[in-house]
Length: 146
Image (cartoon, rainbow, N blue to C red; front, side):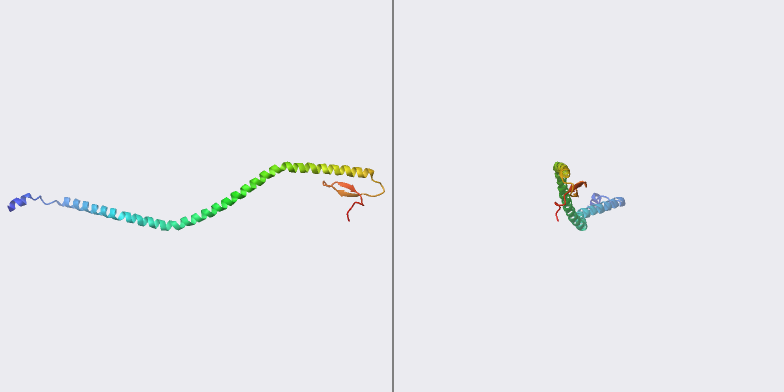
């Protein structure tokens, strides 16, 4: 019987087959180790990255808020300036009207001065007043305020 049991056993594996089996077992063990530890290593690297970059991001957030506030103030000022320029454009007709009325007043003043000089007695010397454009207009001494 013993001879029969010896015949049923497979022959011992060769050294090449043993080396291949050992390499395969090492690779399987390494893969199992990586699969087991890879998620925890990834989470550690992620936590490390977050702890390094979070303070920078927080500072950048506050800088962006400050810049946004400054930009909104500048936009508000710019809108006010545009509104002021537009209202000045609308007021130009009023200023033109005022300028025309001032010209008319100066013309009438010159006409009145001319009439006063023509009809005034020649015995009294007349004082000269300066008009809007620097032209001298005659004026009576009696009408000067003192």
